[in-house]
Length: 295
Image (cartoon, rainbow, N blue to C red):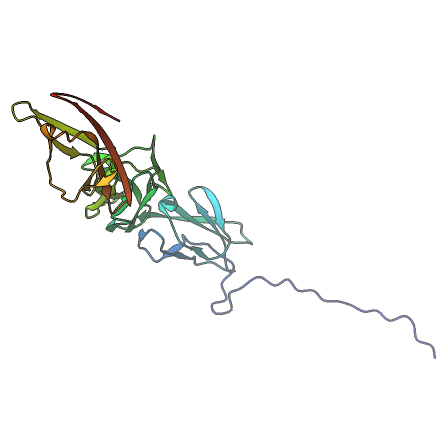
């Protein structure tokens, strides 16, 4: 006996969504809670916030940082925060079934670390016309730097260069007038501090010597002395007609009555800069008359 076509009957039941533990229907979200509640963070630390809302099923979370979406999970992590990260952080929890949304706002303030240990490093001695660089460092966050010489603020220009956020002060070329005491100031939004004074000594010279003459007409004598500008002070030696004089007094006495005419040369030497400069005074004696000239 043949069989007719079979009928398959599906019985469909509509099930509501229930919480496993209580059997209650979908609900929420309640107003979210943000952990931790602290609002103050130090610059360059990490900001980690967690958002939780009582809802079923589990909520979908969106974070807004100062009005801009910045996260889509319950946890928000912002590493190495800076001052610009201060502001309002909003956690929005949404029930994906009911499409209900609730928000919680937490204000975050990022503060800088106080400036301390401001230090100037670099040479304490340099030679004129050579570049010199002093460097300033400090502990702190978002530090800006400024330089002072003898208490007077230094600004870039001419031979003064400020680079690397003003941390580096370069004198190029250096000049003898750059000798002095330098200090660096570090500042941020929290505090400011000065470095210990840094002494810079610029070596220079000697410049061409100047021969000073005192004429004693009664005794027919010249008194010659030699001076120049140099750092450190130079040593002096005298030559007569290119021959080194055996005695090197601080004041050279020329006896015109003995016909000690000729070319008197003063040579100044700076042993630190290894520079020598000289000036010659020509004295001509004719009888009781004399003339002189420098070259």
